[in-house]
Image (cartoon, rainbow, N blue to C red; front, side, top):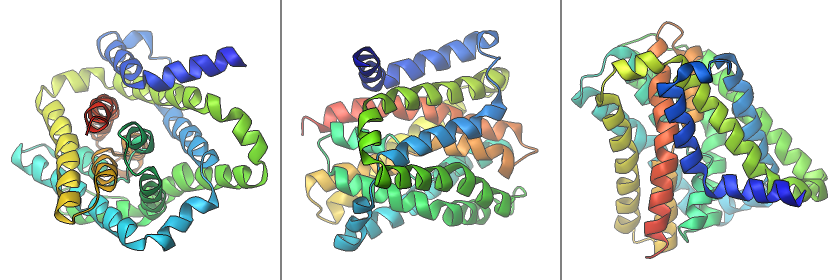
Length: 309
């Protein structure tokens, strides 16, 4: 068990590099990982969400009532800044409908599951980060389809109901199950908590490998523009989040949490539901796949910068 814990710690500490290596292998030698099927993506994401649920407690949601203003700011900022940035960047770079749909879907998803870890490493307000992630994730089944439809209905057909059902199935149900198990079998979840990073990183790597390998030719054919947009989307999210915190005169730990939470998206979810939302647009999965790789790298760098502030 101790060996597994050490391996889990190693995977958790070096997640960015591991994901980058898997992405590079999948992109340049796709045949090596083509055995990982895209049909597995939803189930793999459910594993990640279930693991997230196992780390949550009902007390995490008390923050919603004890610090409602902070949570409200985080919620509004999350579902306003990132979708608007996605739409703006897509129009500026004149993306085709498929890539535009993928970029906006990344923007309308809730914060990334790794944002809490990055906030911790940044010496930010972890309870606030957990609270924002929890609330935004629970709101996602309604807000993600609604905002996606708002920005895209004039360009492409958006299956709102399928998106809603997919998010409930992939995100809400696994999190609730994990939360219930943690509530009634806390000793069990504490015993396995040290290996959860290993399970999550493996699942994320498999998701990235599946999406990138099966879309390698499409990703390479898009040129550098989609990479530039994904990087700008993520970095501008960090910057706008940090600027908003300063504008509202929040203390530094809160400002760090807000910056990380806004900039890091649940791009795995965007990738998983892209096929459901846009069945005729195969390229819609590409921005989410690239974002999944990039935001783990940028998050690790940001944590290093923030921790010194």
